[in-house]
Image (cartoon, rainbow, N blue to C red):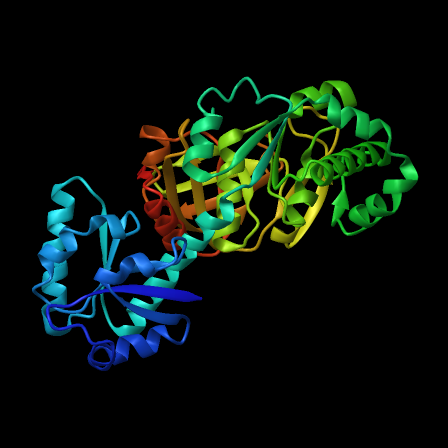
Length: 411
């Protein structure tokens, strides 16, 4: 990985001297990056798509920095180890930048701390690049109850470089009816035999669910899609099955897939994947306990790889078809949501999965979570219902990604 540091120093610029003075930091960075030190007057020689940031090497450079905003990626990041009054200069520069209603962040600390922060910053930079050109298939139309989950396709393309592709639901029907039982029978048998139990459902329902999975997979391959959101209602009325099994298996294969045609949720899942490399679970905020600061996140599908074991059940709201009750082990989680019509708002919080409940009044997979942030966000300032869950602690990574992309955090 290449890292171009745009160097500002009050002394005569001498690359060897700069390297010697700041060697401890540079050696730490060189464990992960190929380092390029570039005098700010030569910044136009840096490749346009390169990873770069300002390095404040000394004091006395405040005016030079503020007169050269155009050479920095935005939001502006200032890297400084504090040597030769460089931190003092960075604080003055940051205050000046913020007074102009511009965003700026200072990376400072021990060489090891700064290196970790630069790595996280680069991870966000690389994730934004990875998003560009991604194709999100919208199969059918979003569920009518998703009244706060719309996305402006043009603005999403402008901000994130992604494309929402509307696909008639009939494209699924055609592929569904063309698939014979012998094409999916073996996979259906393996899927059911790996389950802890099969309750309230039949082999015929499993075959229909597996045929739908196969139909969506074919569509994904033929239309070169990177993620899919599915109109469950239309499919249920026409094919007498739900997308629960299909979503679980597709997510297992690294294809972010959401149900109900949720345009914001599928973008959240895609973001989570490019930032962390992890598969995620989309759920309803089903219950909130303000006293214990807990929520229950529930849905009728979950990626199998996220579970310790799973049970095949009928759909809780239909009492027919097939859904998945996933059991996850206790542990750290991250809750994430990207919202707004322009996909410019977000919520992120870490927490701890404490229990798998089995209430008859919620969807089959039910996860009780104790959050590190106050749960009042959901009652006073929510971005919508669906939030996505990742196993592990990724709030700092996601926050850096959203910060670099100038998104507003909701608390």
